[in-house]
Length: 255
Image (cartoon, rainbow, N blue to C red; front, side):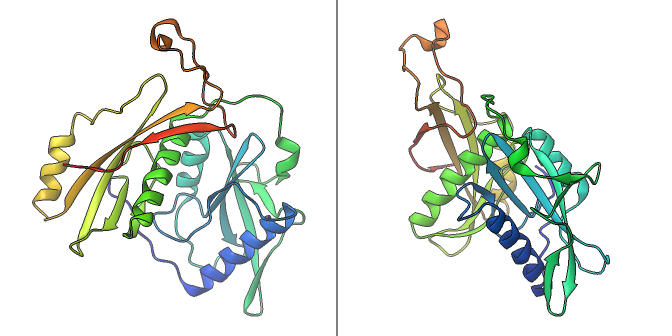
Protein backbone atom coordinates (compact mmCIF):
# COMPACT_ATOMS: atom_id res chain seq x y z
CA UNK A 1 0.00 0.00 0.00
CA UNK A 2 1.08 3.56 -0.70
CA UNK A 3 0.07 6.85 0.88
CA UNK A 4 -1.25 9.01 -1.97
CA UNK A 5 -1.66 12.78 -1.69
CA UNK A 6 -5.29 13.53 -2.54
CA UNK A 7 -4.88 17.25 -3.23
CA UNK A 8 -7.99 19.30 -3.94
CA UNK A 9 -7.85 21.98 -6.62
CA UNK A 10 -8.84 25.63 -6.40
CA UNK A 11 -11.20 27.37 -8.82
CA UNK A 12 -8.25 29.44 -10.03
CA UNK A 13 -6.24 26.32 -10.85
CA UNK A 14 -9.27 24.82 -12.62
CA UNK A 15 -9.45 27.92 -14.87
CA UNK A 16 -5.73 27.68 -15.61
CA UNK A 17 -6.00 23.95 -16.31
CA UNK A 18 -8.97 24.48 -18.61
CA UNK A 19 -7.09 27.13 -20.61
CA UNK A 20 -4.16 24.74 -21.00
CA UNK A 21 -6.45 21.98 -22.28
CA UNK A 22 -8.10 24.32 -24.77
CA UNK A 23 -4.71 25.28 -26.22
CA UNK A 24 -3.93 21.59 -26.81
CA UNK A 25 -7.35 20.98 -28.37
CA UNK A 26 -6.88 23.95 -30.71
CA UNK A 27 -3.43 22.82 -31.75
CA UNK A 28 -4.78 19.35 -32.47
CA UNK A 29 -7.14 21.06 -34.95
CA UNK A 30 -10.28 19.44 -33.68
CA UNK A 31 -11.53 17.23 -30.88
CA UNK A 32 -8.54 15.31 -29.53
CA UNK A 33 -9.75 11.71 -29.31
CA UNK A 34 -6.84 10.30 -27.35
CA UNK A 35 -6.88 12.11 -24.02
CA UNK A 36 -5.40 9.96 -21.27
CA UNK A 37 -6.12 12.44 -18.48
CA UNK A 38 -8.62 15.25 -18.94
CA UNK A 39 -10.21 15.47 -15.49
CA UNK A 40 -9.46 17.06 -12.13
CA UNK A 41 -9.96 14.00 -9.92
CA UNK A 42 -7.04 13.38 -7.55
CA UNK A 43 -4.43 11.99 -7.23
CA UNK A 44 -2.20 14.00 -9.56
CA UNK A 45 1.01 12.88 -11.21
CA UNK A 46 0.29 14.90 -14.34
CA UNK A 47 -2.42 17.50 -14.90
CA UNK A 48 -3.15 16.57 -18.52
CA UNK A 49 -1.98 13.78 -20.81
CA UNK A 50 -2.73 12.60 -24.31
CA UNK A 51 -1.56 10.35 -27.13
CA UNK A 52 -0.69 11.72 -30.55
CA UNK A 53 0.31 9.09 -33.10
CA UNK A 54 2.66 6.70 -31.35
CA UNK A 55 3.80 9.24 -28.73
CA UNK A 56 2.51 10.00 -25.23
CA UNK A 57 2.66 13.44 -23.61
CA UNK A 58 2.33 14.11 -19.87
CA UNK A 59 1.86 17.72 -18.80
CA UNK A 60 1.91 19.83 -15.68
CA UNK A 61 0.84 23.46 -15.89
CA UNK A 62 2.90 26.03 -14.01
CA UNK A 63 2.33 29.65 -13.07
CA UNK A 64 5.33 31.67 -14.29
CA UNK A 65 4.82 34.01 -11.33
CA UNK A 66 4.85 31.12 -8.87
CA UNK A 67 1.67 32.19 -7.08
CA UNK A 68 -0.87 29.58 -8.21
CA UNK A 69 -1.25 26.50 -6.01
CA UNK A 70 -0.80 23.48 -8.27
CA UNK A 71 -1.23 19.84 -7.17
CA UNK A 72 1.44 17.27 -7.92
CA UNK A 73 5.21 17.50 -8.26
CA UNK A 74 7.92 17.39 -10.91
CA UNK A 75 9.03 14.04 -9.49
CA UNK A 76 5.56 12.60 -10.07
CA UNK A 77 5.45 13.94 -13.62
CA UNK A 78 8.81 12.42 -14.49
CA UNK A 79 7.81 9.11 -12.89
CA UNK A 80 4.71 8.58 -15.00
CA UNK A 81 6.27 9.91 -18.22
CA UNK A 82 9.35 7.71 -17.89
CA UNK A 83 7.34 4.65 -16.82
CA UNK A 84 5.13 5.00 -19.91
CA UNK A 85 8.01 5.83 -22.29
CA UNK A 86 6.40 9.22 -22.86
CA UNK A 87 7.40 12.88 -22.86
CA UNK A 88 7.34 14.92 -19.63
CA UNK A 89 6.22 18.46 -20.46
CA UNK A 90 5.45 21.69 -18.66
CA UNK A 91 3.03 24.34 -19.87
CA UNK A 92 4.05 27.75 -18.45
CA UNK A 93 0.94 29.89 -17.90
CA UNK A 94 0.35 33.56 -17.05
CA UNK A 95 -2.66 35.31 -15.61
CA UNK A 96 -4.43 37.80 -17.87
CA UNK A 97 -7.13 39.48 -15.81
CA UNK A 98 -9.27 36.62 -14.45
CA UNK A 99 -8.16 34.30 -17.23
CA UNK A 100 -5.03 32.32 -18.03
CA UNK A 101 -3.03 31.76 -21.19
CA UNK A 102 0.17 29.90 -22.14
CA UNK A 103 3.34 31.96 -22.39
CA UNK A 104 4.80 29.81 -25.18
CA UNK A 105 3.66 29.79 -28.79
CA UNK A 106 2.34 26.75 -30.67
CA UNK A 107 1.38 23.92 -28.36
CA UNK A 108 2.65 25.93 -25.38
CA UNK A 109 4.80 23.05 -24.13
CA UNK A 110 8.40 22.86 -22.95
CA UNK A 111 10.45 19.82 -21.99
CA UNK A 112 10.30 19.30 -18.22
CA UNK A 113 14.03 18.63 -18.03
CA UNK A 114 15.58 20.94 -20.63
CA UNK A 115 12.91 23.70 -20.88
CA UNK A 116 13.22 23.50 -24.67
CA UNK A 117 10.03 23.88 -26.76
CA UNK A 118 8.10 20.67 -27.53
CA UNK A 119 6.19 20.25 -30.80
CA UNK A 120 4.23 16.96 -30.45
CA UNK A 121 3.59 16.28 -34.19
CA UNK A 122 7.33 16.51 -34.89
CA UNK A 123 7.98 13.63 -32.46
CA UNK A 124 5.62 11.13 -34.12
CA UNK A 125 7.34 8.23 -35.91
CA UNK A 126 6.27 5.14 -37.87
CA UNK A 127 7.79 2.84 -35.25
CA UNK A 128 5.49 0.25 -33.66
CA UNK A 129 5.91 0.83 -29.94
CA UNK A 130 4.86 -1.85 -27.51
CA UNK A 131 2.76 -0.69 -24.57
CA UNK A 132 4.52 -0.48 -21.22
CA UNK A 133 3.16 -2.22 -18.13
CA UNK A 134 2.02 1.17 -16.78
CA UNK A 135 0.08 1.92 -19.98
CA UNK A 136 -1.55 -1.49 -19.78
CA UNK A 137 -2.54 -1.03 -16.15
CA UNK A 138 -3.94 2.43 -16.89
CA UNK A 139 -6.05 0.98 -19.71
CA UNK A 140 -7.33 -1.78 -17.44
CA UNK A 141 -8.31 0.74 -14.76
CA UNK A 142 -10.17 2.74 -17.41
CA UNK A 143 -12.12 -0.38 -18.43
CA UNK A 144 -13.07 -1.12 -14.83
CA UNK A 145 -14.09 2.40 -13.85
CA UNK A 146 -16.20 2.82 -17.00
CA UNK A 147 -18.11 -0.36 -16.10
CA UNK A 148 -18.54 0.85 -12.51
CA UNK A 149 -19.99 4.14 -13.75
CA UNK A 150 -22.23 2.34 -16.24
CA UNK A 151 -23.57 0.21 -13.39
CA UNK A 152 -24.71 3.40 -11.67
CA UNK A 153 -22.00 3.82 -9.02
CA UNK A 154 -20.23 7.08 -8.24
CA UNK A 155 -16.45 6.99 -8.68
CA UNK A 156 -14.41 8.52 -5.88
CA UNK A 157 -10.83 8.20 -7.14
CA UNK A 158 -8.60 6.00 -9.27
CA UNK A 159 -5.01 5.64 -10.40
CA UNK A 160 -3.19 3.71 -13.11
CA UNK A 161 0.06 3.21 -11.21
CA UNK A 162 0.71 -0.57 -11.16
CA UNK A 163 2.65 -0.17 -7.90
CA UNK A 164 -0.29 1.37 -6.03
CA UNK A 165 -3.14 -0.53 -4.35
CA UNK A 166 -6.11 -0.19 -4.44
CA UNK A 167 -6.66 0.99 -8.02
CA UNK A 168 -10.22 2.37 -7.75
CA UNK A 169 -12.53 3.69 -5.01
CA UNK A 170 -16.28 4.08 -5.57
CA UNK A 171 -19.52 4.51 -3.63
CA UNK A 172 -21.09 1.08 -3.19
CA UNK A 173 -24.75 0.09 -3.05
CA UNK A 174 -24.80 0.61 0.73
CA UNK A 175 -23.61 4.19 0.31
CA UNK A 176 -20.15 3.50 1.74
CA UNK A 177 -16.72 3.45 0.05
CA UNK A 178 -15.63 0.26 -1.71
CA UNK A 179 -12.27 -0.47 -3.30
CA UNK A 180 -11.02 -2.42 -6.29
CA UNK A 181 -7.63 -3.94 -6.97
CA UNK A 182 -7.17 -4.09 -10.76
CA UNK A 183 -4.67 -6.32 -12.52
CA UNK A 184 -4.00 -6.48 -16.27
CA UNK A 185 -2.50 -9.32 -18.31
CA UNK A 186 -1.41 -9.60 -21.93
CA UNK A 187 -2.63 -12.44 -24.14
CA UNK A 188 -1.87 -15.35 -24.20
CA UNK A 189 -2.44 -14.98 -20.44
CA UNK A 190 -6.19 -15.04 -19.90
CA UNK A 191 -6.68 -14.33 -16.20
CA UNK A 192 -4.79 -12.11 -13.79
CA UNK A 193 -3.84 -13.50 -10.40
CA UNK A 194 -4.30 -11.78 -7.08
CA UNK A 195 -1.11 -10.30 -5.57
CA UNK A 196 0.65 -12.13 -2.75
CA UNK A 197 -0.34 -9.47 -0.21
CA UNK A 198 -4.08 -9.61 -1.03
CA UNK A 199 -4.96 -11.14 2.36
CA UNK A 200 -3.07 -8.38 4.15
CA UNK A 201 -4.72 -5.72 2.00
CA UNK A 202 -8.20 -7.12 2.58
CA UNK A 203 -7.62 -7.41 6.32
CA UNK A 204 -6.52 -3.78 6.52
CA UNK A 205 -9.66 -2.45 4.84
CA UNK A 206 -12.00 -4.95 6.54
CA UNK A 207 -11.04 -3.34 9.86
CA UNK A 208 -12.18 -0.01 8.44
CA UNK A 209 -15.45 -1.47 7.17
CA UNK A 210 -14.62 -1.08 3.47
CA UNK A 211 -15.60 -3.89 1.09
CA UNK A 212 -13.09 -4.91 -1.56
CA UNK A 213 -13.13 -6.38 -5.06
CA UNK A 214 -10.66 -7.87 -7.52
CA UNK A 215 -10.80 -7.14 -11.25
CA UNK A 216 -8.94 -9.10 -13.91
CA UNK A 217 -8.56 -7.47 -17.34
CA UNK A 218 -7.02 -9.50 -20.17
CA UNK A 219 -5.98 -7.63 -23.31
CA UNK A 220 -5.10 -8.98 -26.76
CA UNK A 221 -4.20 -7.36 -30.05
CA UNK A 222 -7.06 -7.07 -32.56
CA UNK A 223 -4.65 -8.62 -35.09
CA UNK A 224 -3.84 -11.68 -32.98
CA UNK A 225 -4.39 -15.09 -34.67
CA UNK A 226 -5.46 -16.54 -31.29
CA UNK A 227 -3.44 -19.69 -31.77
CA UNK A 228 -4.50 -22.23 -29.07
CA UNK A 229 -0.82 -23.05 -28.59
CA UNK A 230 0.31 -19.40 -28.49
CA UNK A 231 1.66 -19.64 -24.95
CA UNK A 232 3.91 -22.52 -25.98
CA UNK A 233 5.05 -21.42 -29.44
CA UNK A 234 4.93 -17.63 -29.05
CA UNK A 235 2.55 -17.15 -31.97
CA UNK A 236 0.80 -13.99 -30.76
CA UNK A 237 0.88 -10.27 -31.59
CA UNK A 238 2.31 -7.82 -29.02
CA UNK A 239 0.16 -4.93 -27.79
CA UNK A 240 1.24 -1.91 -29.79
CA UNK A 241 0.39 1.61 -28.73
CA UNK A 242 -2.56 3.06 -30.63
CA UNK A 243 -3.56 -0.22 -32.32
CA UNK A 244 -6.87 -2.09 -31.97
CA UNK A 245 -7.40 -4.46 -29.04
CA UNK A 246 -9.78 -7.09 -27.69
CA UNK A 247 -10.54 -6.76 -23.97
CA UNK A 248 -11.84 -9.52 -21.70
CA UNK A 249 -13.36 -8.25 -18.47
CA UNK A 250 -16.07 -10.16 -16.63
CA UNK A 251 -16.79 -7.71 -13.81
CA UNK A 252 -15.82 -7.24 -10.19
CA UNK A 253 -15.14 -10.26 -8.00
CA UNK A 254 -16.03 -9.54 -4.35
CA UNK A 255 -13.39 -10.47 -1.82
